[in-house]
Amino acid sequence: MIIPARIPSIITWLFPSRVWRIPTAQKEIFLSFDDGPHPRITPIVLDMLAAHGAKASFFCIGDRVKQFPDIYQRILDEGHAVGNHTFHHLNGWKTNDDDYGSDVEKAAKLIDSRLFRAPYGRLKGRQARAISAKGFKTIMWTVLSGDYDKKLSPEECAERVLGNIAPGFIHLFHDAEKAERNMLFALEKLLEASKILGFRCEKINEKLM
Image (cartoon, rainbow, N blue to C red; front, side, top):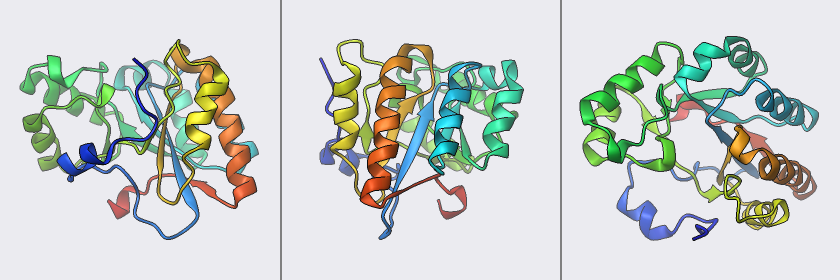
């Protein structure tokens, strides 16, 4: 089953403490990438963003930051935002609450950010409250590119994001091998279309969260 590109409003209503869209009156969208840094794919993404003068937010897996510190540092050096995506890419629904919290804290030792995104978007209420109590802000998304879905072609993936360019929308991509083909195609199309429409691609500012 292919998940709708736009997050249903009932979901955002059920979880109001999580950030689904950035409040703004400006013509700006917020690109985000999960599951990196990747030693080959993340640099390609960074090059594309730089070529378009775009900023983004990278929700990084702690173990990958440990493996590829130079790529992680490049993300920071080029002015992008980073966020905590747990250390081992844990599914909160399938993980003991204490173990989940410990994994987030382990990642936090390498990722200096109050921004947090749960892998798969799966987070128990108790886990969400515990993470919030530690000062994190849970960032979700407005638009799911579906770049990881093998049933989607690159063109279909691009259509999902191109049909959802609006102020404050958070677009979710993955700088990972499972998504590479669709992501790179859709990202380029989105960067081009945003510029034509007069939209800026910005990073999520944790100071405003």
